[in-house]
Amino acid sequence: MEQLVLLTFLSLFALAHAVEWGLLLLNARRVRRGAATPPALAGLLDPRRAERVRDYALARSRLALAQGAFGAGLTLALLLSGALPLLDGWLAALGLAGAHRFTAFLAALAALTGLAHLPFSLYATFAVESRFGFNRTTPGLWLRDQAKGLLLSALLGLPLLYAAHAFFARAGPAWWLWLFGFLGAVQLLLSWAIPALVAPLFNRYTPLPEGALRTRLEALCRDTGFRTRGLFVVDGSRRSGHSNAYFTGLWRPRIVLYDTLLAQTSPDELAAVLAHEIGHYLRRHVWKRLLLGLAGQALSLWLLSRLAAWPPAFRAFGFAAPSFHAALALAALAGGAFTFWLGPLSAWLSRRHERQADRFAAQAAGLGPALAASLVKLGNENLSVPDPHPWYAAWHHSHPTLAERVAALAPARG
Image (cartoon, rainbow, N blue to C red; front, top):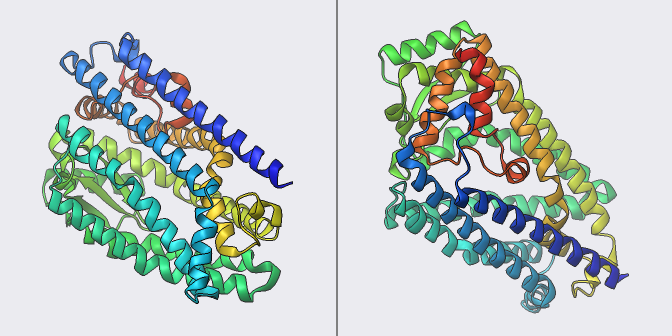
């Protein structure tokens, strides 16, 4: 049985990475060849940026291929070399047991994998993003961000690991159900705590200044029945030249606009971007995704409870006996070979929600022309590929392509 478990994992792992690398290469070849401009974007794209769009996309593809190959090698090394059982035995020899051994094992694994991937983060920030004029992060700021992230991970993650072990050790066979309820409550708490307490540790959030733009956006909120905690500007330009807008919170969300977005778009276009975000909220996309995520979390924990009681899965990867921390480690490292195949479904659902939000901005708010203009402008500024390979987009893109979005808004524009 152990050999069957190992063979199944290796087959799915190899197939998943072959598909992923194949999609990356297909998309890179399409970008390199420079496909013709889609009809919906004729005359709208900046021809002077075409070469930079291609070069930026290819640079990111090469990085993704390298990081994917490294990640695959690291995963196989950890799973097949006996390193995980060796780490477990070393912690036991130190006298750690129960919750302390559980937490130390998983924290060490997280630290190892995080450190191993840091060079790719450095290269992406200070080589790729800098080369194309997007990076504005200094080495000092990058180091401070890493230190803050590590500290927050420890302050939040370590208590959660101890709590997870307590449920496993004391709640009996239904431990996974109790843990699910606990994690769901934590997730709801974090939906308030992250924007209110955590995000300000990394960026400065200031109310949108009084003036015509704020008056326009507040009127849009009133007209669409959208209750908000306020309009805020975040200093995203401290780290990147990319633009974005989003809202945080489940009941009365706050709207956050990047300062780069304010600099790149007109008031009408900003109103259209806000209308799109309001569409997400009024169509209850946040709640739908939250409930779907909770359902997936419940299923994952139930499967984990079955795995934790199945010795062949542990023996296949060198563990002498089942344990909760080994089950979590195996699920984290080997689970991607199984969940990879859910990617197209998740991406499809996200694109469906984005189309609905676009329709709301165009039909309910009457801002279709401005939204189309803002999408084109942001695509030009962010060096976005307007028409990627359809297979790659279907698997990975959370938004419809620029060509698809502008084409869908064409009736509203014309």
